[in-house]
Length: 114
Ligand SMILES: [Zn+2]
Image 1 (cartoon, rainbow, N blue to C red):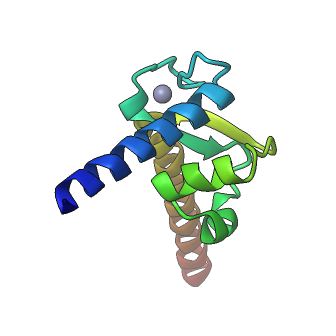
Image 2 (tube, helix red, strand yellow):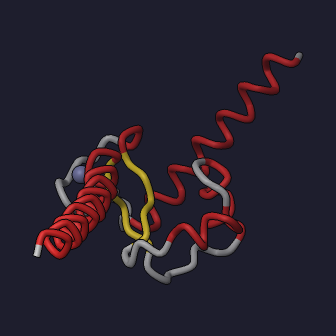
C-alpha cells in the first residue's frame, strides 16, 4: 500500500516537472546555453540569478515545480538550463569571489611592504 503511494507521488512529481518544462521551453525544453534536452538533466534557473531569496518561499526541486504550477507559471525571469551549465554559472561566481579576495590580500600585503 505504502509502496504504491510512493509510486503515485513520483508519477505526480514527474508529470508536474514535465508540465513546467514544456511551459518554459515552449513544448521543446532544452538548456538555453548548450541545448541539452534530456529532461532528467535539466533544471529551472533564474535569469538574474537572484534565486536565493526566491528559493526560500518556493522550495527547491519538485517543491519548486509544484510551486510554479500552483502559481500559474509566473513569467518573471525563469529559464531552463542543464545542471552542468547551472553549476558552471555558480562555480564562475565562486572563482570571481576567490580572485577578489586574492587580489585584495595582494594589495594589502603590498601596502605592508611599502
Ligand atoms: Zn547546458
